[in-house]
Length: 314
Image (tube, rainbow, N blue to C red; front, top):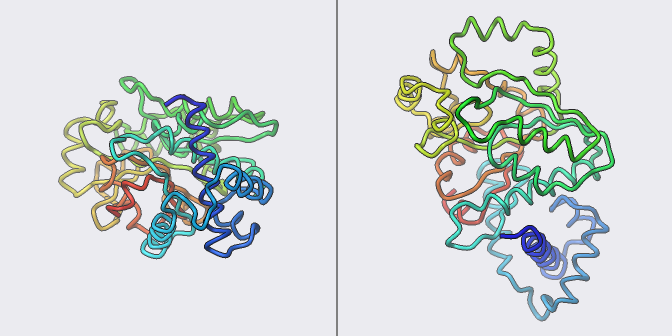
């Protein structure tokens, strides 16, 4: 999908959603602004756009009642404050572009509406997609990595996404520059005591908004492809019940964080800080259904941006 096509698709989707909430949901523009996470001025423009394009008749096109109902169901089920479902084609197994555009929109809203000036950032393809769709911003916005990176064999580095995000702003990017999997727990302790790394970690911990992807241990996952985890480590994690992974933390099917000898060597983000900030999961694609579900069951996250296809399985 071309960038211009995606931008148009995203605009159509938002205009229909605003129109539905306004004309059918009986919400005022201020309420819609808060619920969707965009400015009141943009809500006004999108409702007018929906009318101009003929979306508003005696009903609003797009089947949004089902989508909004599902968003509310997931909020209640997983105790979320934010849930945004992105419409995709049934044949689209990897809706990363649409989800990336929604993630960029979320960042823009946090900057413009909530005056957020720094973000904690996770790893993965999704972060690169978000960076692709984030427009240039004439403000100082800092981006800080929250965990170690997938190095050497991975075609997607955490640094790639964070550098691209920082490039779009006048801010700084803070890279930990440490592999996600280390040789030993003692090595991890030594690295944690290095002053500049400790300072980056504290910056990441204290960010008010964190944006994290969701991974796992499937053959096509970045963790496996990176080869930074040995086969022995992967086998031990699987045996312990690991399914989903967020910022180096592995979850079993009940949402419990896996805690074994192998996880002690992982340069992960401290999950206790997830609840102390707006920590939003941004991920999609049919292959990630079980991974996302395991992470959501932990109850650690403020919200999720994903696709409608996955939502049906959650």
